Image 1 (cartoon, rainbow, N blue to C red):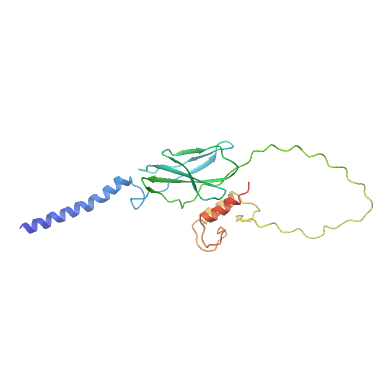
Image 2: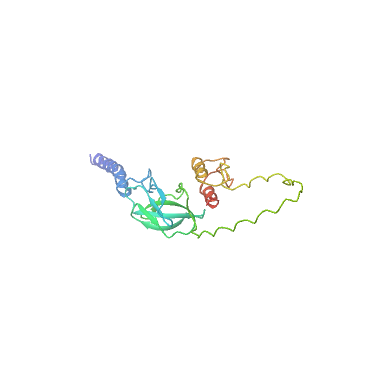
Length: 214
């Protein structure tokens, strides 16, 4: 009889432990990610110019996180952390000329979401310069001396190939960015695989950023 009671008590303890574990995991993570451990990246990240020298970022909330880290990508460089905040908006001001993109990372304690996500569309900050004075008027053409016409001396050379010009429009712009986003994460040969490593990822994005048309 005592042996039967011990078996029933042990079985009841195991059942309660199995039921309680998912509840504790949910309380710890606040419903983060499918694994219940690592936070998910913030949704709906947007970036827009805020004047000539600033960019404003906004994103959606992730439940239960400690805060958010802001990473900047300038001119195709590796992501660099510039802020760690609890708000869901951030403005970076005093920017120098260049092409900027951003990644927002959520974190809880020592755990954080992946940085291998699609960055925000590139935003160009132009150099502010004083326009030069207008050139002087050209001199009058010389009088014709009755000479014959001169040919052009050859055909026009083909336009130079621009690395990152995915749609072959002669410049690297938002249309090339859109093509890269459509093919993001794809494997095999594609127009957006700018470094020819058979996949479309952050390295191809960096090449596009470096050659972005100002």
